[in-house]
Each structure stands twice: as C-alpha cells, then as structure tokens.
Image (cartoon, rainbow, N blue to C red; front, side):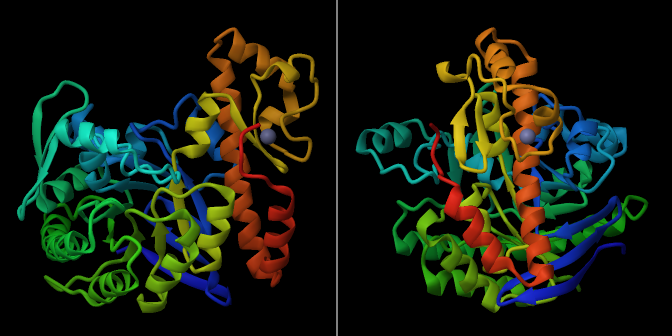
Length: 405
Ligand SMILES: [Zn+2]
C-alpha cells in the first residue's frame, strides 16, 4: 500500500501535510484543478504541471459515459491515458448523476442564487434521476440513454479508471430538501458507504497488480450541525471488510456564508491523521475559510470555466478581460503574477483573442486562472508553515473583491 498522509504544522484547525500516492506527492493544503473528461479544458498537461498543480480531478460520471471505463483501464489507468505525470482523483459520479442527470442543476447551484419557484417546478417535471435504496437510475445528458449507478458500480467504474484517490458513492441533496429528507438521505449514504468499503476491498484484492487506490468517504448533511457531525462520526469510525476510509470528502449543499462553520463541525469529529477534501470549492474567500477550518485539498471547475468566458482573477478581484476598456491595455492580466500568460501576454492581446474567438484566448486565461488559485493555496500552505496564516488571509482579502467587473 503506497498511500500515506503526513501532518506537518498546525495553527488552530489549519494544517500542512503531505499526501503520498503511487503517482507522487501532494503538499497540502492544495488546489486540485478539474479535468472533467480527462483533460483540463484548453490546456496541455505539461502547462498544468508547470504552473504548479500537483494533481488533477476527473469525473467518473463523464468518463463512464465517454469513452467508457474499460477504455481507460486498457490504457493503463487515468494518469497514463491523459499523459498526466502525477496523482489523480475521480469523484464518485454521485454529484453528476443527481445534478446533470437529474436536470435540477439550478437547484443545487451553490453560488447563492435564490430559489426560483418556476425553476423548481420545471426541474421537477424534467427530473431524470431516481434514487432508491440500491442506487440511482438516470438518463445520460449526452443521448438520453438510461443508466444505473449503485455504490458497487461506482467502485467498479472508479477502479477501472484507476485514479489514486477515489470517492464513495453518496446521495447529493439540495438546500431545498427538508430536514426529514436530509436525515433519510444521510442514513442511505451511510449504508452506501459500507457497501463501497466492501466492494473496494474486493476490487483491491482482485486488481492487486494495479497501483493502490485510496478511498475517501463523502460527508453530507447540508447545513445541519447534528447531521454533519453524525456523518463525520459514522464515516470517521466506519470499518467493513477490514477496511476504513483513507480520507474524507466534504460534499453536498453548502451555504457559502456558513462554509467555514460547516467544515469546522466535521473536522472536529474526523480522525486527525487522515486527509480531508472539500468538494467543489474554489473561490478565494471560500478557500481561506476551508483551509482555516482544516480542509487539506480542494477542487472546483470555477477557475477553468470562468477562464473560458474571459473572467480572470487578479489581486484586486475578478474582471472580464474581453471588456472594451482592455482593448489597448498592454499590461498583463495581473502585474504581480508570475504565470506564463502574465509573463508573455497583454490584456489587449487576450482581449483581441476572445473577441476574435481564437482558441488561444481560453488557453491563456486558463493557465493564468489555474496558476492564480493554485498559487493562492500554496501561499496559504507557506503561511501556515511560517506561522502567519491570519496575516496572509487578512492582507489578501483586504484587496480582493469577489465580483466580476
Ligand atoms: Zn498570470
């Protein structure tokens, strides 16, 4: 077994450490860029390595539908298939089968949009995923074909894909489910976690010629302190087929304003010596809240998705580089940034690329945005080691405005 987590320094709940996987190390805290379909959209893997990213996270749901897990297995696993020379993660597919598949994407939007009654009604009518005790039946968002994920199938798919860190299959709830449903769902996710451990152990034995894969349990419970703590206690102490979880994912519906508080609830119940991944979080203020409260790794599509719409990060906040005011602005996106894009290209040039719909625009913006977020979390790591995390946080957030200009 070649998975290990070593803790280095701690300030309050914030901590630094090193995750060791068969494909290399991850110094934590770390931001893990998302490569949904085994590619960080628009960028070469070499560029993603050079900008400092230590690992990438792909989606089991997308890779299951296309190209199919057997293809990736035949290629020798995700890292070989996509030519990523480092650790990889896959999520369980739970989020996607119940969001993309379910057609209620707007309801689980965690950007703080207020619920819209029309959306809820429409989405319920179009709901394409059904949850039962055994698993979830869903329609492919690609061609409408019917598929089924169970905890066992998710483990089989993730073993075939072969990422270093994989996640247990969980049920995603939304903030609009009532507490009774959240409790039932949490209990179902607990039973599914046991089935994941059993299937994972079976597959690990069967596929002993493959590199060791670490399994993280996923903690749900929305914004309820008792449910979140119960999930952390249940999965933190869970053992089945002689196995326990190698780490934990903090998932599900999270009110952004209470992010830090929610992370602190579960962190206080989890075993100290195992890593914690905060799923789907990547905005600067949220990353500070996550790190401060004891999360070790993070993934989010935001830096890459925003880059493709020309929204870029700077020390003072995000802005839209395709805006008219940047047409003749020959300064870099961020004059304090050391990324390849900022060292070589101007706002005016990138503005032109986006307006002319040139493919290089999203590529350069992606390199900058991913660098910016990866470096931000690396700076937090250095600040914890240096003992000045609170000062770094206050300094960064005093300048950064979380809005697109
Ligand atoms: Zn840059």
